[in-house]
Length: 288
Image (cartoon, rainbow, N blue to C red; front, side, top):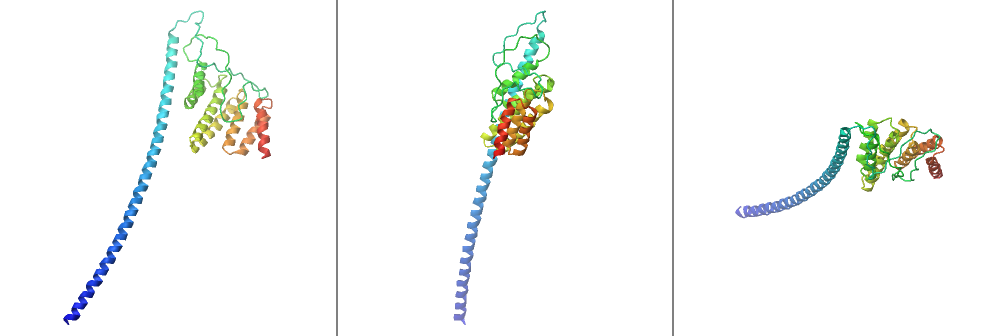
């Protein structure tokens, strides 16, 4: 009986040792899998943190750029207000004082109303989405000082921002011009340059690989160009606005809408220089 009991006990110990060994191996495998899962989770967390940091950094840069733009605009407005205060304190003599000629920025062209059949007096836009500046007009004659900002001052300040590539400031300046002087002869041109500024912003976003922002800017440009014809149909910029709108629609892959606007340009302003470009573009689109 003792021998049988001893053998049974040894067998039980061997079985128990085998079970413990198997349990240890399973535990080690489970531990290894858990460690691998933890490492993968930590790696994913680090990647998410990096992506979040990059997004935060990009947003911070945009905020800094907007802050700088607002600061510059505020400084320009302060400068204009200072000039206004100085002018208002000057005594009004019989002969208005002669102001120093503006040399930093050429005076923009004075827009004159025209009918829909009159050829556009402004240069035709290039067959691309890069905005082009108009030719320099003659210097502005001196005018008497008044107690209000002159339309030409606000327009020139906005156009200076556009020419320097400060498109957000230019948009704000031209909008302020339209708010103050919606019926001024240059209103149609101001609205046109708002559209051009959005085109320039879209190109900048595209070059930076920011496709959604570029699309949004192009869509906004289309809306701004349409306002020229809707609000200032006799403006010299009406034909150019139609053509630039069509080009923006083409970039947005809205070919049918672009063809409709080009055809409308040809029919409404047949004698304009933009009409020639529109016919060429229509012919190219229809041949494809």
